[in-house]
Length: 115
Length: 113
Image 1 (cartoon, rainbow over the protein chains, first blue to last red):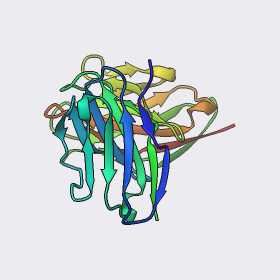
Image 2 (image 1 turned 120 degrees about the vertical axis):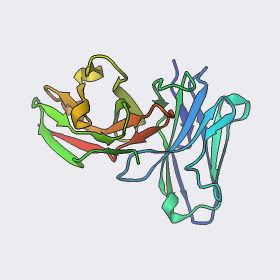
Image 3 (image 1 turned 135 degrees about the vertical axis):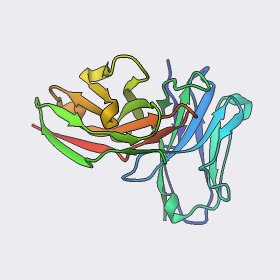
């Protein structure tokens, strides 16, 4: 079974530029999560999708971050414009059952550096 | 507010020695508890989880954890560490009123020969 795929693995941009990250979850997984992991901290949930609907985006900075999950499969997270404090690893995870504590499977992450 | 605390930022242990990583949470109800491991450049991998039942949980790679309600703790243990156990370990807590996970700040484990 293929795992959660993410691209790119690394990205360096200047502040005020835009950037997008892509995630392809495990086939058949209904729930998809985006986390932000700042150096020295644990992952923080940004947004949770169930199929193609948003379940929770309470911690997503909506003035600059956006995410979509068209067709309920893969997802894109965008930052526009980026700030220095957005430097972090962005992790995508998926789980098979919505509305439960079913195991979340994580991708390798995208490491973003904003200069 | 709900929170997860991992008191140890960094632990160094000799290969073959035992390991214990601490995790404490604050929440009024029974939480769902998880331990994840993250190797450099990799995503998080689930080691074990506790939902209910036996408070001693066995996981992968020889790890186990014990839920102690009275201490609001879910400490991770391994009797004999291997060099490949060097990684960062995260405790996470989920709550019954939603299905979000709250992660601790992590404990970095270094294994010396």
